Amino acid sequence: MKQIKLGGTSIQVPAVAAGCMRIEGEEVSDVIRFIDTAVELGINYFDHADIYGNGSCETIMGKALSEMPGIRERLILQSKCSIVPGVMYDFSKEHIIKSVEESLRRLKTEYLDILLLHRPDALMEPEEVAEAFDQLQFSGKVRNFGVSNQKPMQIELLKRYVNQPLLINQLQFSVTNAGMVSSGLEVNMNTSKAVDRDGSVLDYCRLNQMTIQAWSPFQYGLFEGVYLGSEKYPELNQKIDEIACNYGVSNTAIVTAWILRHPADMQMISGTVRESRLREIAKGADICLTRKEWYEIYLAAGNMLP
Image (cartoon, rainbow, N blue to C red; front, side):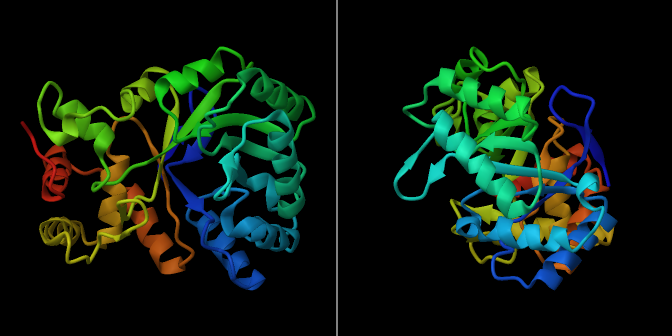
């Protein structure tokens, strides 16, 4: 498994992280197999959030870990907080600390390796976030911090107050949701994708050594569906299948390779609990597409080159 450095640190992490949003409803024995398979493939990084399954995803993960003596220290556990579904986003000190403590209880662990703030809070008071981070770090409950779905100036505002480096920005990215690439390629044009919707977040993260974690790598729109095999993207699927055939791997592997080919050294959040698909994703992490192949896939998705 390809390794990358996390943020500007010397911490080595796999280029693929196992997203745990879909383990809700799985049997504990199935989750144990999921963890075992991921670790076997070199994927020891697991991404959670307090809202996944309304906490049930962390709960079942905790039950599985409790039946796997000695496994915790071999894993990197990440969780996210701040979303109160359908109500608000909450960056208050009280909410952050309470969310972490509840995640730790559900996961049956004493600490999180990484905590991300899940979505920007319009009512954020950065001084409160700083106090929460300090308390969580000092108590040993959280070791590293980051954000999710934030643009550069939101991050800069946080950095003005927090004492810890922000190592990660988790952002939606796929060949069909490549706005942060398209806005750079179509710069100074009147095309729709020339609109900079995120403040050049891709370049910002590279300049500031923040790891971009790509979520929903196989989805188009906002959870509208999977583009692989979709009738909405015939040209894209034809090109991906053609390149997959050349490499002797699945289309899933090629999508993985496409994301990880970007020199930003992104980490892809896999989002599957199927062993077979996880193995396909792991194969993709070891493929380095040519520049021509990368652009061919980009164009086949309906993107343009000026």
